Length: 307
Image (tube, rainbow, N blue to C red; front, side):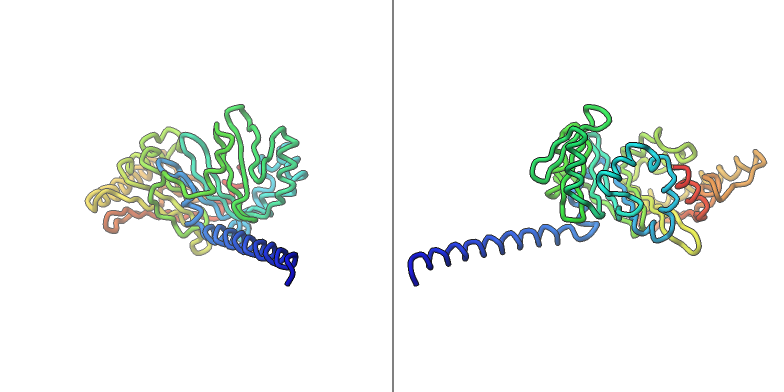
């Protein structure tokens, strides 16, 4: 073998090793983001409100069609976004796992993305893309949007005063809290700090929140049940005694609400919040308080149609 042949073989060998290393790194990176629990590890969930929506499941249930005529879908800006990027959430969005922190909002988004079109759209809006990271200004100067691909069908997105905040999602978050992920297509996890400041919650739910403001963690999920749905509450208390007390308090609040509606000579309507809140039942299991509320499909359809 001549010197040139040996040199060529060496170059080919080095290229092959590099190719295998890159392939192995990409394979490991993608494998580490194959499940929702692995997405959760990327989010800075300490003291954060965390929520998950499985849009694919809602689409299969026929509920996502109700959003087609919603105000957000009718906005001119959204129509331009769809036209330029080809991304329509009613068709291309599969799931969103997000957390809202005092410093920013972070999202892991699963769907079908045309990354070249998204980069072009970013530049059209006055933003810029360097390698795979794109940055653009949101509705106000301090709301800076950044996003990048975590894998071909997975986007890491952030809205923060830091225009590179999305890069935090490339590795496991340093500040996380342990939370129980419900087995449901829609759920939300609330830290104690959110329950202590319940002013932003819908009217009628605040008194329920105050019953749980000493809990370690609270999750509320919505899942199919029979011909309708069911809201499931899971409160992680500090002790079994506290779980018993929380369940009793929630029962008292529910009874009081029923009596208030009866005094006003009204009947709880299962298609609005009065019917849902007055139908709750509660129990404890060890240091956890569990609650359920049956929800008619009409209630969900009304919420989506009015969004």
